[in-house]
Length: 384
Image 1 (cartoon, rainbow, N blue to C red):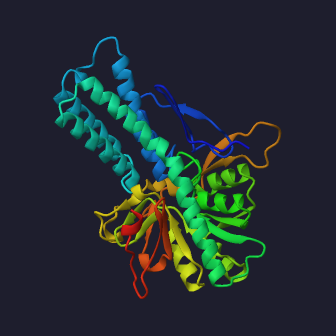
Image 2 (cartoon, rainbow, N blue to C red; image 1 turned 60 degrees about the horizontal axis):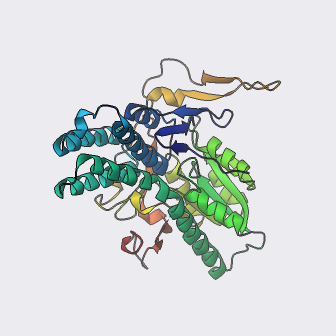
Image 3 (tube, rainbow, N blue to C red; image 1 turned 90 degrees about the vertical axis):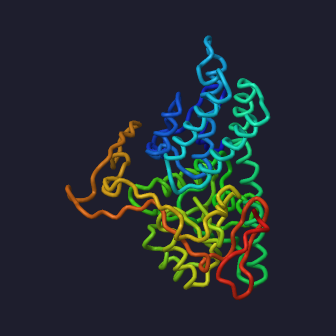
């Protein structure tokens, strides 16, 4: 079956799959402006740190492409100063859409750096715009290749660890993951889910388990759709059942993605990840983070400095799905409130931070980092 995709880009036409409607309805939304991209990211129509960065960059490429094609040259293309001021504002605006995912900041900084360099050497505005378009597209295009690299690094590391510890893997490995980290969260293949896919493709996976992190989060439903599409044997569990899973089933590893990794290895990921890490540590199950280099933020010393996005309280009270039982071919989607109206004091963070001491390994496209003997934090230098 064809892999799922989160973004379609062709010339100056840009579309995303509306992840709020998945897995029951596949609807592509046109992105016709930077404002559309900002809204799609903020309202979680698109999610996953790499996919967010790709959409933001591609919306800049679309904006500049249309400016270059315009019958009348836009004001911002009249001079280098006007172009820099205008694009800087756009990049700053896009950065505000989701504060935790560092990939978005990495993408906007990358474009800012290129803009500054081209202005400094005195290139004309149209050439600068063309260079920015190429760089924006590269942000998205590079994602698939590096995902496959990190997935292989992580998968081979786990296979070697299982072999060294002489664990029973005669039927293949059983791996638990949290949230969605596949093609719908990236530009393709995936990070943590990419590792699971790699194990499946190489005949080394028995079963993938994935958690339902909260009623309103789409992570579990998107993961279900991706694993079903890839025909990977899998089981969904509620996040409160992870401990029971470890007690009664042989789990070889927990593998997760990341929205930001601090210099010491502390990792921010979808809410519920920390819970799984604590339980994994108690049951001596390896806990592996798989993420691109762009997710590592060396300017952040530890997890206490990672900004945690607080979602609107109402989101914790709502769940979306199709009517059940559902008769016929029509799959009517509904959104319902699962709590009493007017609740106060709702705690609704979108992410939590797993401390480095609970993480066994961190894999990027450059390799796998583990802690030195006796250390509680990572040296990420070799893999960034």
